Image 1 (spheres, one colour):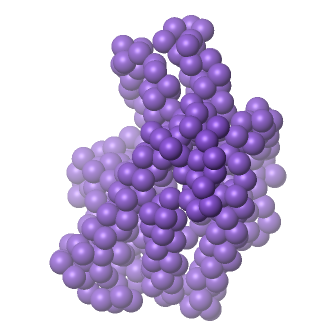
Image 2 (cartoon, helix red, strand yellow):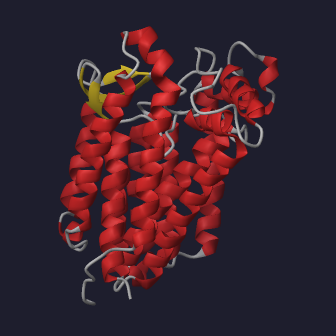
Length: 365
C-alpha cells in the first residue's frame, strides 16, 4: 500500500463543493414559489437542503479521512443491511409512499430511501468480490453469474417499489465495475440482449411505463397527461437561450413544471442561466468524472480501483439519465441530479461516496 498524502485530489474536492453550492442556490430559486404555496415559507426547501448539505459535507470529510480499505471489511454486512432495508420498506404501514412509489422509511417529511443506500452498498461489495476473485470474472458461471445474481435481486426489489430510475443507476454503475474487472465483452453483449428483453417485459407489465415511452416518442399526443412533464421541461429550456432569463426569473416554476426543485431542476437552470449556466454545470461534472477516473487508474490496489470506478459510475450514470430526461432524450423517470437536486438520502449518500473517492485519491500513485 502506498503512503497516504496529506491532501486529496483538489479538483474532485473543489468541483464537488462548487456544484453543491450552486445546487443550494438553485434549489431556493426553483422552489421558493412552491414552498410558499404549500407551506407558507419561501425558505422551506432551502432550509432542508442546507441541513442535508451540511450533514453530507460532514460525512464526506469523515469518509475522506477513513482509510478506504476499511469498507472492504464491512462490505458483506453492509450489503445484508441494505437488502434488509429494501424488504422493510415494502411492508405496508412501514414503507412510506411518495410520488407513487413505496420507497421511503421515516416520519412526516423526513425519511430515508433504502434504495440510495443499496447503490453504495452494492458498489462496495462488488469491488470487494471482484478484487478478490478477479481471475474468475472471465468465467460466466463461476465469476460473472454470482455478481449478476446479486445485482438482479437488488434491482428486482427496487422495482417492486417501483423506482426504475434508481434501479437503472444501480445496474449501470455495477456493470461498469464488472467491465473494469475484466468481464468478457461477449458475455456482456448476451447480458444486454437479456436486459433488453427484460426491459420490454417491465414495460408490458405496467401500462404507465408504456405511456411514458409513447410520450417520449411524441409528447404532443398527450400534452396534458403522459407528455406534460416533457413539454413543460422543453418550455423551460427553450426561452433560456444563451444567457437565460436571469436568476430567480423562471416562469415554469410557477406550478407549470412538476418537481422543479428535484427531478427537473436542470430545466430551471437552463431557463434562468441559459446555455452558459447549463454548460458550466456539465463541465464541472465532467471534471469530477475525469479526475475520479484518473484516481481509479492510479489507485494502489484493485479494490480501490474498482471502488473508485463504481462511485464515478454512479455519479455519471445519474447525471446522464437526469439530463437526458430533462432534454427529451430519455423517457421520464424519477431521478435526481447529483449534488444539485433537493433531497435528503440522495444528497447525503452521494457526498459520503465522494468522500470515499477522495480518500482513494490520497493513496493514488
